[in-house]
Amino acid sequence: MFTGTTPPEVRNLLNEVLKEYKGKDVYIGCSGNFTVDRLAHYRGFNVRSNDVSLYSKIASDVLLHKESKFEIEHPVIKEIYDSWEPSRYKDMIIMLLVIKLSDFKKLNNEFVKTYWNYYVDNSKQFYDNTIEKFEKNEVFNFEIKDYFDGDFVEHIRNKRGTGLGILFPPTYKGGYEKLFAFIDEVFVYEEAKYEMFEPEEADELFREFLEEDENIIYTDHQLKIDDKHLLSKLRIGGGKKDIFIYSSFNNEKKYFIEKKKNRPEVNMEVLEDSYEFTKDSVVKVYRVNKDIPNHYKQLYMSAKVNYTEGGDFGIMFTVDEKVFGFASMSKMLSTNEKAFIQSDFVVNSDQKQLSKLILILLKSKEIRKLINREFKHFYLGLKTSVYTDKPMSMKYRGPFKKTMTEPNKKTGINKLVYECEYNNKTIQQNFEEWLKRIKKQK
Image (cartoon, rainbow, N blue to C red; front, side, top):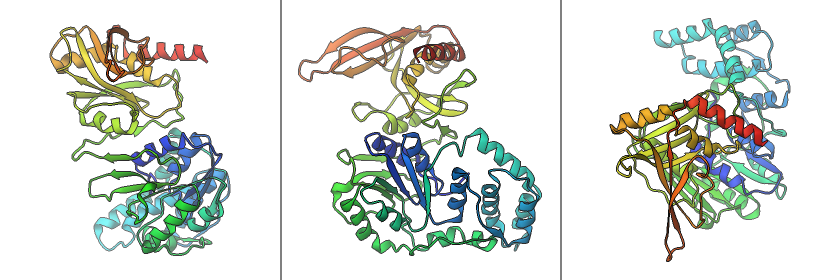
């Protein structure tokens, strides 16, 4: 819906790093579509946002409940805007419509004319549908404390010593002008003041930010600076540049994440941290290619877990069509009676006992049918193994029973085997029982 989206791999890593930050204020440089701003808000921080585009300024006005100040010069777009009834999102939606129309603005052939006319003729439907999407997906259901409409360099320098900076500055010359040229043709507004960012200056500037203050920088430009600040390298693939994350805060651990080639994409959003399960939530499961949970393991499973990839197929768990967890199954490791769970994990969430929900749902009769059909064998239940220095696993305790402990005296690591029987209840029945249990504990 918006442009300038932060890749999920970056969001997940930032989420882990922010868990360790003890300050109150987080300053975002180049907020773009406010993806990281939203993440920082849900982690409980005071968010100080920043950007130079009219697009981001209007989004910030929605969040801060301010009136945007601009005029529309384009006669067709002005007529559309004036015909819409007032709403909190009106200015944001006309901006999104202009971005849609920018691809067809030249009107130099029948193809672009057709698409231009389609969006113009259906602009009221676009308006109504976008409001519905905003409200259904809670797009603006987070807070920022303030917004600096200006140069990210000034924003980050001025906060020195007062909070953590997180920035994704453009490393290509003229980036803003290329992205928002048509916006400047349509709107008359007071433009933000900023210096053109020169990519060749990145090393010196970013070294200053990392050595003199607490900042995190993610960029597709590998810096010629001390590697001690390199927190992560993300190999996104698909023709996209690698992303490097540098940090002067909590950079003891190093991460290397690589997207697998030809990995099937999940055409669903990942559940946001703040989502709260209710009686109206609709939980579903999907059979997925094994590569999908194997990819997401590196994003959501603890770095302390010594996991391996593999398995024969995966199971994806969703709530209201948003992904909240995965499991992968292995026939080779299964016994005659129990199908083997090679891994199970959930996304980052503020919801308590979400990992136990996955285990309870795995006992459902829909899962039994799915596994039996895939493996062409009738299993009575499930089993898995855990390697830990503890005598038990609090995660599996309850939904599963420990059936074996195999200690390793050399390493001090125990191999624990947990098993369960299917309970012949539906996914939704198991979910509702888990939800009742959670609410009783509050």
